[in-house]
Every structure is written in structure tokens, then in C-alpha cells.
Image 1: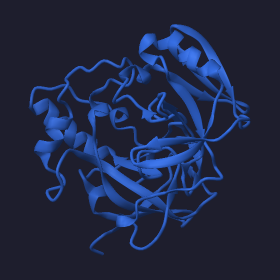
Image 2 (image 1 turned 90 degrees about the vertical axis):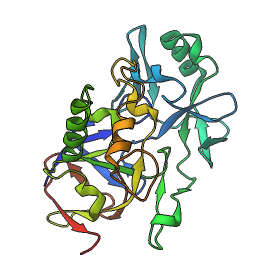
Image 3 (image 1 turned 60 degrees about the vertical axis):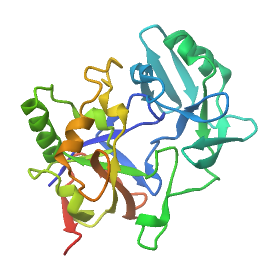
Length: 282
């Protein structure tokens, strides 16, 4: 098995950046989910509320985070931490400390996306603050993340996407690309749903080891075209995932596995890395 794709999402719910390598950190891939958008109540805003966020492109240079959209000129946000008072912002039920970015970002979002973006601002995770991952699936350990939904890494496999797309086509629906699921790490696997049985994934020479902790329950973001923000089939692929019943003991649609880093903080993960899996029943 090998890694076929690595993707970081510097700003939660904006477009991802495909990379050939990244530094592995305990809270995720380098620069993943360092920023997010919040409303006037400091609650996180994603494509669930505003599908048009999928049309905002993100790039990283040595000194800037760059936001791009066809409607406006690109905006560069310095990577140097902004000055200002910490805010308390919320992601689901977690309250996190964050630094507000310039009001220029808020004005740019309105120019790019229109009135639907009114009242949004962008914040950066305050790295002196620690956001713990839920303990229920950590086997007594501990893990931390930034602005991801819940876990520092999301792992998906090509075999599971192939199986889902076969079922979609058989049901008269269009296949979906992997970007609908916004994974960080995509593993080449001939076997569908193999990741649901893996306890760990290790780089073959032992450079790093990831623990697969919890099936990822999917939401309506999977129905949003990640290039156009259109919703071609409002029920899909969620309806088909539920019918496939890949997690019989759980309710809802599941695809991919949430993961944490066991070993290898500071090492580099690369597309093409060969991996070895240890099954839960081994």
C-alpha cells in the first residue's frame, strides 16, 4: 500500500491544497485547519451553511496565505501572527482561543461571495491554546487538533471510493471524486472499507505511525461540488453510503477514518510512502 494523495486545508471549509509532502505534527499536517471563518457570534461557519466557500482557493507562500476567487483580486494574509486580543471561538461544542485576522479579509469575502458572506471574519488558532480530542476513542491516550471537526487526520482509501462509486452508478447516479470527502491522506487499497479494520498505519521503515480511531460520519458537504459549490444530487452520496451500511453498529453515513499520530512528530510524510497496516483483530 502507498499514499496517493496528501491534502491540507489551511482555512477550514475553503478549498484544499494538494501537496507532495508535509510535516507531520501531532495536531495534523503542517498548516492544516490553522484558520477558520466565524460569524458575529464567533461560531464556526463552513460549507454546511455557505456552500460558496468551496469556490475560494487557498495557496501558501513563504510569507503569506493567499485567498483567490474569480470575482476579485487575490488577498494575501501574512503568515506572521497578527497582533490583537484573543477571541473565544466555537467549533461544535469546543471553545478555542483564536487571533482575529484583519478586517480586510471580511471585506474581501463579501466582495468575492456577496451579501451571504456579510458578518464573517477569519481567525487563526492560538497555538498556545490546546484543543483536546475526545477521549472516548483514544484508548487512554491524548491527542490535540486545531480547527478540524474533531480529529487531526482524516484517512480515506481508493478502494472504498471505488466501491461507493460502483454503487452510485448502479443506482443511476453520477460517481463522486475523492475531494467530496476532504481527506488529508488517501491510501491506495484494492479492498473496499479495509481502513475500517485497521488499528494502525505505519510507514514501512518506521518513520511514523498513525492510529485509526473512529469512523468519520459524513454530512451534507459531501453533496457539494468542490469546484462549483453546486449540489448536483442533494441526497447523494449520503443516501447510498447509508444503504451500503459500512458501519452496522452506527447510525448515519460513514466514509474514511479519523486518526491521530502515535509516532513520528516532526517527520515528513510523502506521496508514494509505502505503508503497513495492523488490523484491529491482529
